[in-house]
Length: 438
Image (cartoon, rainbow, N blue to C red):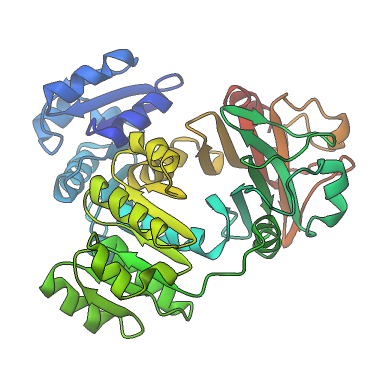
């Protein structure tokens, strides 16, 4: 497949790195400095404006199976997609920040086949994390009928110190443990493996079963009070989502005009006009008593400082937005419970469009593992073979099978059928073999 990527920022480079092995990749970028970072990849780099028809012609977008516009400027991405479509590109994807462009696109295509919004996806991801206690990562598959969750096992967790064989009878029906992530190690667990404090447990199952598994792993009830630091697009959308769930979030925004607007738009929220890094204010308003704190301001430094302030005041769980994905590990190492990168989320969403048989894909632990949603082909050698007898790749495990209306958590006796939608957890080195088999 020929893929043209417009923009070599962190999102564009992530996509190029992932696709270079199996596809013919062309990257258009105005900045010579960013182009230099592509030298380590097997891609054709073209310097120029991706919204220019001349540059698009030079990149031969008329031969492209897919054009991905992922610059930091919404309007450039939309124009680049429209120009590519005009020149004959087969399929175009535009990344945007402003959700209003989604509404415009839905009414008239604008020359864009698919549009992904960083702010919408990020606010939805944070809302999911808030709703599942102890969740470090959460992803949805099969139109929300199956969830994958990565749970941090803390000291004192009811699951800690127990082998999986002893734990299996107590797992909620409809859930399965598919991996233990221990430091840099990704483990496909066996019955004798013991869950340790500090492990990240990866579970797959129905939403109801994952909810019960999460509560059991953390010992915590669902959060009732949430404070959001930053009333920008992500903070606003998150507050709106939480209001619809019946919560009354507290929103802190420094800009007076934006604060007034938020107060008008969020009738169930309590909006404060104040600097979110003002310790006296945080203490005075007793924001440290909230169950969850979310910091989604416009700069990573502010998000880190305010998140740590909330943690020091007693907030049980703190989630911070991170513009630079390289900061995720740093944030979590110094005390932030979960760091969320909009750029990582948007890159995953775009990448799944490059794999025609993969309906969903999530990248875990710095690209060391993936969770895939695939449809079983009638030519698959696994059809009709019990999973315990199947030659399934080492480093991979089937977490769930969706067959019609049924979600099946498979044991060794289950065999696959053509048309089944299968959720597979796989180490990076096993992904290609899993795709070929299914």
